[in-house]
Image (cartoon, rainbow, N blue to C red):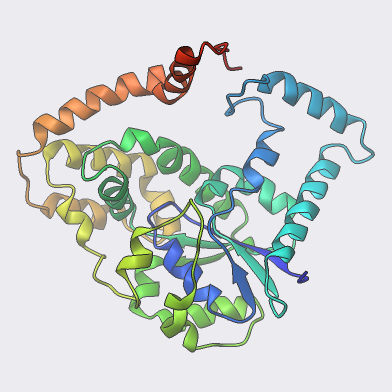
Length: 325
């Protein structure tokens, strides 16, 4: 088992994080794997909201927090034990020469404050990308071009908001890179990140990243097969997706929600992004479909069909259908 330090790569989904993960994973001092999601249930065990279970999450959370109250250091001791467990497991899947295990799980944005508390020595890498490009890539990849951003609100709003707040509060705790800068000069940006980790430069990382395989059910399966070299081809691809007035209006509202200050922290100018969006040619072809999906999105958010679908699936087998709490 390798003695490794945890390293976290934090970003929105479809930000190029798998590309950066594979480039860094090509360094002999860094081990990595497909998205682990390891820490999410262990941290959410202390949260009152956000989990639906058969066993009753609110009751479990009450019991766990009460148990933590009897520990000498309370909640901190629980988090320290979770950190020790994760570090041990990371070491078991790492190479013998590795100094770090890189965990790239985008939903860790939701627990970024706990990560900073649990791993006081870690300096997570934050990868920003033009938020309009992120939204467009999400819709093209997971919705086959249909406009359904409501399916990803937890990432686009809650997760991103928490990550921005954490970086604003403790900027020295993070290493920050923009996707646009990385693909423009990957060697320079990779060397800068490696220097921040105390690792020697390894120019071959950029050329050999395609050899880093990430087997597992979760993660980017598109970019892994599409790209075998760092490319700038995807920078303006988002403009092909946001052509309908419905989509452009949603994007304007999203930029407004992010606001000038938060976008500047990410390295983007709201006026420049808005001007780029306004310059995209408008087409009415997708309007009926976009409006239909928007209406469906309201119902989706209220009804939460994934939970109800799981309950209905039990009925033919006459299994007891339980309410979630």
